[in-house]
Image (cartoon, helix red, strand yellow):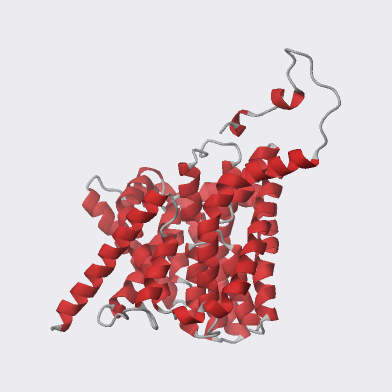
Length: 412
């Protein structure tokens, strides 16, 4: 059979399979990411039916998927929002990094993987999944809750941290010298700072330049600009994903909203291809040996994320119910963790890192929606079991103080 025909058959089967898996995940009301990863495992090296003709195209599609994921995240925030979050919420960002990056780094060192792998695994355990969390907040009807801005602030700070982290990890994986790595980081910080400055001062001008009443023209201009900037960023040894994220930040208003609506289907398509691609390069037989450390790491970092959200919400004056909800919502890991692990897999620094990251994300992307829903009732139930019953019963018609102080946002 002609190679182009084989390619069309393989790639068409992949897209059709992803659509069916996404529909199944929607019926079961959980993220489709673990199903996409499992599909990649099934059709990759050591899987049931390895692909051949379409693998190179899938690799290109996966790279576009990462770029679109970061672009769409950038479109969610304005430059002024980012500056405001940096000023007011940076302590929560520091606590988030300390509590959630250290367990990953410690495990890598305990396994004898070395300092570079430790930095990579620290990023895998640090960054929450913005996509999964946004979907969970919408599904649970919590977008208007008082703890939701705290959750979003932590996610924004993690996204900003990626602008610094990705160039560092790229330089480490490339094995460049300290001087070269410092130059790369300086370039990344300089470009990020310049883009933020331009976005704050001239964001409306940029948006007017990109704006168009024709959806087709708007889509072509935004997508072309994003790919161009991502390519230039990669040429400067700065992550292409960071370049895409900064383009999203620079756009605002109606342009950002219109671009978001137009690009969302493309993002979903290529992001799904990216998760499949990561699974393709993970041998299923390599997962069982790392399943126990992956599960242990998932449990530890689920608890540290809950602690992070609780502390940040308490600092913002949120009630105990809202604190537990904030912590449980932040547990999910997903796209960013796979992006970071994918860089390490491509560089070939540690054979077991990819399988461990895959198993880790599979656990937490399933556990995350459950902790978002049940952390609050479980915590309150445990607290009620621990707290002794009061000796006196309130008089009939009296309202307990706890009920009078219950904020509006705690309603279910």
